[in-house]
Structure formats: structure tokens, C-alpha cells
Amino acid sequence: MAIDEPSTIGIEEEYLLVDLETRDLYVDPPEAFMKTCRWLLGEHVTPEFLRCQIEVGTRVCETIAEARHELAFYRRTIAAEAKRHGMGLVAASTHPIADWSTQVTTDKERYTQLARDLRAVARRLLICGMHVHVSVPDDELRIDLHGQLTYFLPHLLALSTSSPFWRGSNTGLKSYRSSISIELPRAGLPQTFGSAGEYNRMVDLLVDLNCIEDATKIWWDLRPSARFPTLEMRIADICTRLEDGIAIAATFQSIVHMLTTLKRKNQRWRQYLPPLIAENRWLAQLNGVSGELIDFGRGESVPFSDLMEELIALIADEADALGCLAEVERLRVIAAEGTSADRQLDIFNRAMADGADQREALCRVVDHLIVETLEGCEAS
Image 1 (tube, rainbow, N blue to C red):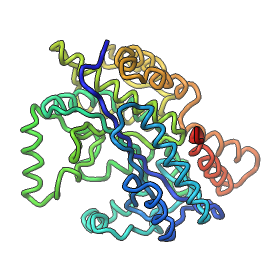
Image 2 (spheres, one colour):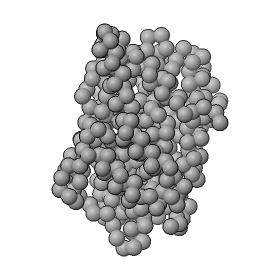
Image 3 (cartoon, helix red, strand yellow):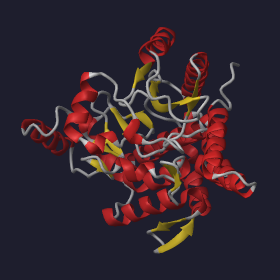
Image 4 (cartoon, one colour):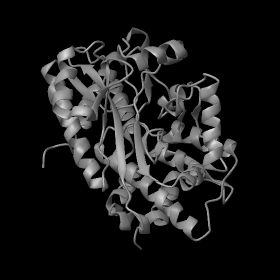
């Protein structure tokens, strides 16, 4: 098949800055670091809510290969500059040992307002994620697909999990970030709407009531972008391995186009009750790719690896047409080797078995994350 309309994709990633000596977060990086990053990467790099974080965003990319190339460049460029200041770069959604209460907020009006509005909830947001934008120019189609895509969000979360630790403890979850992020207002699984007008009326009412300044303060796991004619997938943890993140982004883009293909045939994906999708969201953050999700059509729990094979088959034609079938098929590698969360837990458990104390074992996890963040990011 062919894709009738040009499809573009953009990816945002959030990283943590780590003190190479202590392995804890670098609470207040020097101004020269950010200044140099901005000089090297321009508008594609920005500070985040906390000073220990940094965010990058690709250009509007025609292909997933373009996005991969850009993110690899961003990761290695920022890591090299960070190293000059005694810092390491970590792509993980939580830091194994850091304490949110000791972090410093970035001095920027938007973040100052955020801290004022959200109070303790904002101060706990020591988390990083990956956001993927896929172009859907038509307003009505964008809202229609927005409602259908909710079904697939737990699958994407399971594939991305990278946050098993929080404040020096094993949480027992593969994605603890998901529990932190859902504390935000207007967060979690998205609402569904019958039309673009209905969505716009909701946003306008919230603005008129001074609840939000604009639609950027809607933090759902999936949202119509407030700045671009895109659907923005926000449920994913940041993947430590760049190739895993690229595979998930390609999968999301292919799902969008699969649903668009159904729409043109006057068909649509069945929508299930929000509590059922929420149950799969919980199972995904709890177990990642090593557990099961509920197949609502069958009415039974199914190993994630089985669902993954079904998903690959479902979107293979669209992925092939988009030129990202190899990236989508990488889902098999993620399922077989585990996610970043699985590898972090394995390193921690092996260190403890070797006689390390808890702090030392967690520091070994940090060392692993620093190395894996740059895996596959070498200049070609």
C-alpha cells in the first residue's frame, strides 16, 4: 500500500544530568553548560522544569531515519559537553537514588507559574519521558483518531519502561514514572470527544474559567498538540537505548496510519470502557513486556509477547509504506531482551548478590545508564 498524504514525525526526549563523582543528580549545572548546548543545538535543546534535566526536540522529520539521526547527534553532543563539566547524561524516567526534595527549579516564568499552581505535585516531578508527534492535519480526523488510539497506549508504555527505582528503593514497578505523572491535573488516559468542536469548547471553557492558560496544560497520555497539527503520544518512559525509542515512535506512527486506513474504509477500531484501558495501563507499568495485558476481544489475559506479534502484523503494511518496518519489527528484540527497567533491575540484583550494599548497587545501575544512553549514538 502507499501512504496517500505525506506523514511527518517529531520526537522530544528528556534527560537527567548526573554527577560523575557521586552518581547522584547534578542539582545545579553551570550556566556555561546550557549556554554551550544552545550554541551547538540551537532551539532543539531547552532547559526543563528542574535544573538537573534537559530536553531536546527534533525538527519536523519526513522519516523515522531522520529522527534517529538527529536524536543520536543530540545525545552524543550533550553528553560530550556534560562530561566537560563532570556530568553524565542519562536517558531514564527516574533516577535510582535521587531525592526530589533537594532539586532546584529552573528560573523561567512558565516553570515558576507551574510550581505556584501545582505546589508539592510539581516539586515531585523528577521524571523524564519521550513524546512523539505524528502529523494529522485534519482537525476532525485528529480528534477521531485520538479516541481510538487510547486502546494502544498501554502497549507503548510496556515497551518503554525505564523507571523501576525511586529515591533509592525498588518500587516493584517497571514504570514508577507513570504513578508520579498521573498526580498532575488533566493527566492519565485521555478523554474522548465526538468532534473537534467539542474538544475546543472544553479547552475554551477551562481557559475562560482561568483553570489553564492554554491547551499545553492538558497533560494526558495522548493529546492533540496545542502547537502543531499532530497527535502527541506522551505515555512512554524515555528509552535508555535510542533504538528502542525509535522503534516505539515508528510503531505509534504506523498505528496512526493503520487507523487512518480503516477510517477511509468507513471502519474504526472498537472503543472499550475507560476502566478496562486503565487496567491495561496499570499492568503495563507494573510488569512491562514480561507480563500480560488483557485482550478485550478474547476476554482473557494474554502474554505481552503474543500481543506484540499481533500488533506487528496489524501495522506491517503501514510500516512498510512509511519505510519503518525494520524499526517496528525491533519490538521483538525489546520483548526478548527486556526494557531498560529489566536491565536496571538485573544489574541491581546481581550487584546485591555479589555483596554490594544498596547504595553501591544503585550506583552501578547509574553507571550502566550513562553507558547505555549513548549506545548506538556514534557518528556515522
